[in-house]
Length: 483
Image 1 (cartoon, rainbow, N blue to C red):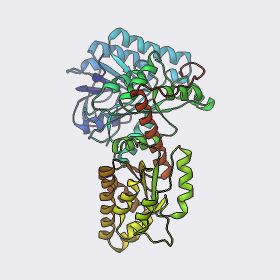
Image 2 (cartoon, rainbow, N blue to C red):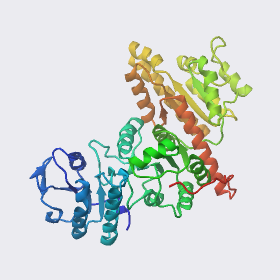
Image 3 (cartoon, rainbow, N blue to C red):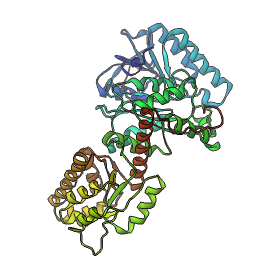
Image 4 (tube, rainbow, N blue to C red):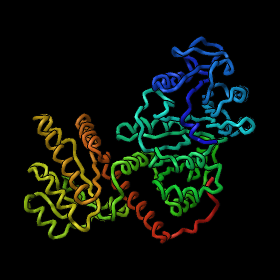
């Protein structure tokens, strides 16, 4: 089946919705205002203002997509109604299947898959949140953004799918589609990856996966997809403890860290450790291009941070090269010797205070050893100006943005902004939004920015090597493909 029917139905029925149970599906999709929404529950006349029908077959119109939220034992009968109704996609929200670890739970899940195979519809789940697609109006919680973006997220975890979409709003990251697929009794990670590989609405793919049920051809699919668009995956269950947790979460068997590391190196998958890394990479790829080298110029307002920042960059494979003599000469022409350094990292506060941000950034970007620039901003310093006069603070921010745009335009080098967490949260958020709205990736820590730059750079090298028919070194990892 063409999986576009998973993301672009015209009508949805929520079976089992009530005033106490998953009415947020009803409210969220009614709020979106793009789909025909039906409710099926024989115990209610209406749910959240939507008429409720006794059974799915009583719905007088066509139903393309069904959300099932009845007790696990009742799901087979609902699926048989779906077959009679000609439903194309069934999302099973209900849990209580293979993730329980019981023979009864596994047998019940296998029965659902068999009904789907015989009836010709596809299943998302069970034990998952389903699909969020801003363009079609599919949602799984209220207040999800209606405007689409270029990022797709494939998540085995429902809770993390909800959280990532919510937190992405603070990063100016928007999604083409998000799918939480749970136990994957039918549609699995590989099915959604195959779809997003060719999806013109998706240019960046993020994933959280605990285990793969379909592995035939997955290595080649990952390689092909990574040559078209970046793929970043957080793999859960690579430790013994994590594998045990995955078994109870989605019934997945997990592979070793060594095997997964080998898979990523061979295919070009960007491997991450935390969910925050996924958002960092999404923001990085959305608003900047991969740097052409590993040299980083760091502009900060604290000389005391220079040594630590150089160590962080080195940890992730980046260099903080000393500026060339000509670069230092240009910087020293307007930055005083006392209390500042012009060698890299650069004390940028004096450039800010003297209105020389444009000159400072241009000098750093002109340096042949610099391939990307990190600007670290402390909200505390800007808060002082906001207390004195908002127009001074805004003027400084405008100069900084114009200076960053000049670097990208004139030198074709990406700029990454760090706005550190601060007690002055309103100033922190205002600063981050200012740069986000101007189209720059913003991070809450220098480490987040450095990790992102490093991974973007390595991804760019991987693609270049493949395109030049020079294969990157292949690790001969031991063991089978991770489940």
